[in-house]
Length: 293
Ligand SMILES: Nc1ncnc2c1ncn2[C@@H]1O[C@H](COP(=O)(O)OP(=O)(O)OP(=O)(O)O)[C@@H](O)[C@H]1O
Ligand SMILES: [Mg+2]
View 1: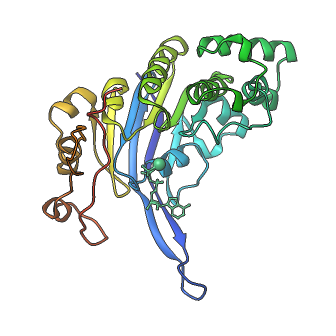
View 2: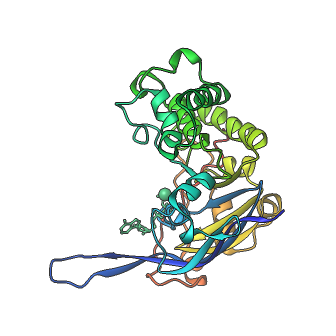
View 3: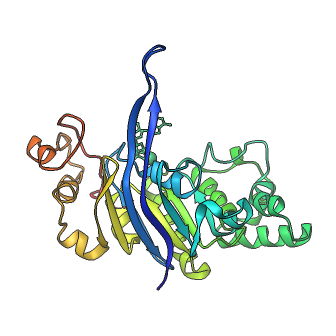
């Protein structure tokens, strides 16, 4: 398998002002991250809140530009691709299906929009493709001309997925695509991701807090901690024997829903055993592997 996505040593620090006269503070969100995602593979990114997962996704999606480093997609430097070529290769699926769909458009319009913007096909072809995708993502045709507020959260996420597939991209960048959904709906959407991957030959960069989701869907995993990838590897060996202390901590701190059990804490021993810029503090890791979808 060849690499569809290559991230080469990218870094990004946000500049944030704390006061009118104070100089901007640098917040390093992604630090020297490198990874390769092979065609047809599901690469999961896990890590606690604030570790830089969404920032990495936005860099891949070109919603942010790196300070240093480069990204290659399908063998071409991402920064040199035209918006049209980029959209034909990479599409996003975001966490919140409530805010990611325009409430004033019908589902039919929302799904067709990427192809209408790109052009090159007739209105009939565009609508036929949208109808076909509507069925493929498991939506009943009677909803085709309804509005986002008339459907459920799970159905909204199906619409977002259909829209992402409209241009037949190779890579889907999914940022917590099931986190806003009920557990039973999460399982259905995950199954849909698995089916679509097979039928459309897709590659996923799949961000999730939920280790059970990741264990089920991912071929490989990258663990982010404070902007860096501290470990990456195949899923099964990772879950059997994580190498990095933070990965071990992440797996051992899985939340098993037992009434009265407090959140696990990252110990100071661990925090001081990895290189980091901010002072060591105790804070909970967010992981819900115990809540298997
Ligand atoms: N627009 C921004 N301006 C300033 N700082 C930002 C901005 N976006 C993110 N950050 C900071 O960058 C760091 C990484 O944020 P990011 O959203 O990538 O984390 P995350 O791993 O996706 O977290 P979560 O799991 O909560 O979604 C955090 O410290 C965050 O506060
Ligand atoms: Mg995020």
